[in-house]
Amino acid sequence: MLKGAFMVTIQNYVRAQSIDEAYELNQKKGSCIIGGMLWTKMQDRLIQTAIDMCDLGLDKIEEKDDEFIIGAMASLRQIELHDGLNKYTHGAVCEAVKDIVGVQFRNLATIGGSIWGRFGFSDILTVFLAMDAFVELYNGGMIPLREFVNMKQDRDVIVHLIIRKTPGVFAYASVRNQRTDFPVIACSASCVDGEYRLAVGARPGRAMLVLDEEGLLSGRPASPFRSPAWKRGVAAAAVALLCLLVSVTYLNRSGQDTDPNLLTRQNSETATTLVTTLEDGSVVYLAGNTSLKFPEHFSSDRREVSLQGNALFDVAGNHKRPFIIETEDTRIEVLGTAFNVKSNDSSPFELSVQRGEVKVTLKKDGQNIHVKAGETVTRLSRRLQLSMTPDPALFDRYTKRIRFKDEKLGNILRVINLQNPDIQLETTPELWNRTLTVTFSNDTPEAMAELICLALDLKKTRQDNMILLFN
Image (cartoon, rainbow, N blue to C red; front, side, top):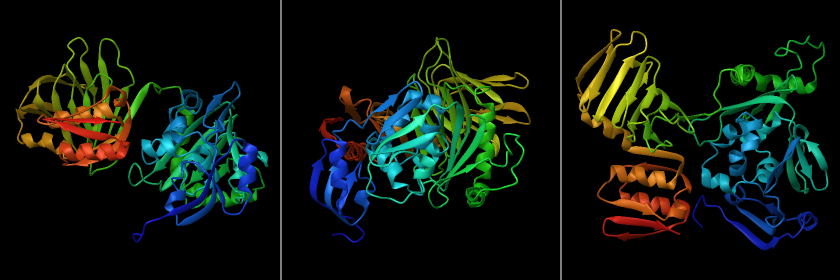
């Protein structure tokens, strides 16, 4: 065995045909309920009997009038994409799950494993602690999640996670060194039936719940007595105070001035360019510390987005639906072109056109200017000034190290082909919507095809200047 490698040895594998059978098998020493096995396989461990509950119908999310019933075998990807759950939680569940490694990981990781493990780094535990959540155990029955999180692990079997639809608003925030890293600190805040709650995770230690027993947020008179739970939470609450203030501000304004139909793509990394493809086929390359807001579906007469930071746009042509970019000080209108935009606090606004033509308008005084291929417009002394682009290589910097996050395979191949016209990567129609998180660094088309095949367990064949990826 390689030094540093892990090996899990399973002597017996059983696909349980009932919860009763799974529970009885799990009472024996050396038995283990297996879910996605994503953490289990990262151990040197002997499992005498591996118990698989995949045949028990626990991989579903059922929405009722008053609650959500989430099966223990439901994947993290299922809760990430569940419309009803994310509508009720104002997107907090999706926000908590979307940065957990990658889509392939979230397709395998289960709710049961994430809750049962009670890991200190768990985003799942943190986000649900702030809700009216209950764990249904085979033997132990229904237990509030806030109690379950502090229980010692035993040989019971988790069956469902229950989320009551108690009226409330929710928010989730976390800090990560990289988008797919474990959180450095995680915070979930809620206001449920007038009660403010704060769940703090990754502190380190298991996530814990802090209630507003002092009435600081609700305006209630402070209690003269402080419970032991409140005292234990003071240190964690202090660490998460910034997250709390941001979250509570969001909760108090929720539904007033936010557009739930707007999506956000943010690149918090500086070493890679995050590439995203919009509904109309336009491709946006986001530099580090840049965010883009856009609707899931563009309107019939225009395509509008807002940008904060630096990005390279390759806009799909459509004369009937102009593409409009809003920055803090300018409005950019294009029909179909490629150009670079710099719009951040550390340097003046700048736009360079690679091909096509762009109209730039200052919001404050209405000054506008048309910028053609090979030209650059800069905002200096509150005026727009036109010049020749001094460094045409600036466009290439965006494509040297590119990263895709939960992007459709068809869109990834399209971007690769735009940058490498001599060799085209193609796939079969049924694979077009497979999603993938991957990073390429000056790789050849052949190397990128190999990486994609390894990630999605695909095969490839080459015919002249075309590489076909298939099952």
